[in-house]
Amino acid sequence: MTDFDKPLERAKAGDKAAQEAIFRMYRPLLVKNAMEQNVFEEDLYQEFSATLLNCIKVFKV
Image 1 (tube, helix red, strand yellow):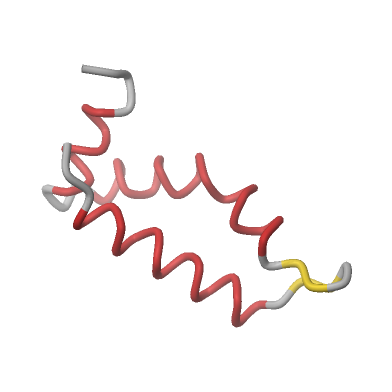
Image 2 (cartoon, one colour; image 1 turned 135 degrees about the horizontal axis):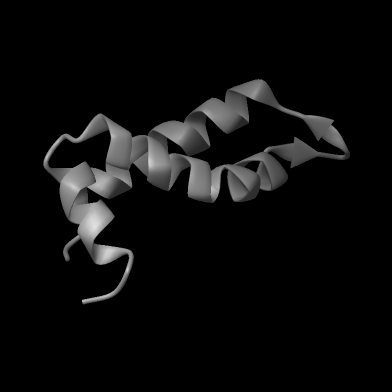
């Protein structure tokens, strides 16, 4: 079991604090990928954020 497994299991079970911790971990990557020609695209960021939260729910541990 890795250091990531325990927070992921808690997040999958609905623990909001664990979900937020994972989200904070990946936020820089989301922001980076939401940049389009050096302009931050809020809609794209929101889509990435929703996708991350969905992936937390369906990821197999």
